[in-house]
Amino acid sequence: MTYNTQGTCSKQIHFNLENGIIKSVEFVGGCNGNLQGISRLVEGMEADKAIERLSGIKCGFKQTSCPDQLARALKKAIEEQA
Image 1 (cartoon, rainbow, N blue to C red):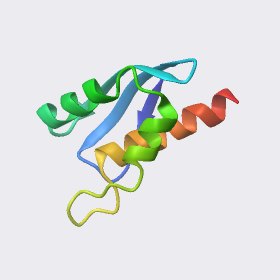
Image 2: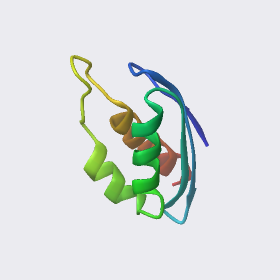
Image 3: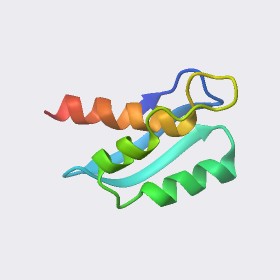
C-alpha cells in the first residue's frame, strides 16, 4: 500500500499488512536513519499496537510527525480492509 503523507518531510509511506501484522515499511524522503529505525521497530508488530504507540506524536512545531503519519496510514488501511 502507498500512503501520501501530509505535514512531514517524508512524502510517502509504502507498507504491507498481512492479517493485521506489519510486514514491511518504507518511507520516501525524510530523515533516513530515523525512518529506517521506525520501520524496523514496527515490522512484525500488530498494526493496532503500532497505531496505539505512534498516534499523536508531533515533530517540533508541526501538528504531526512521520510516526503519526504511519499510524494514520495503518488506520486507513485497516478501515479499507474491513
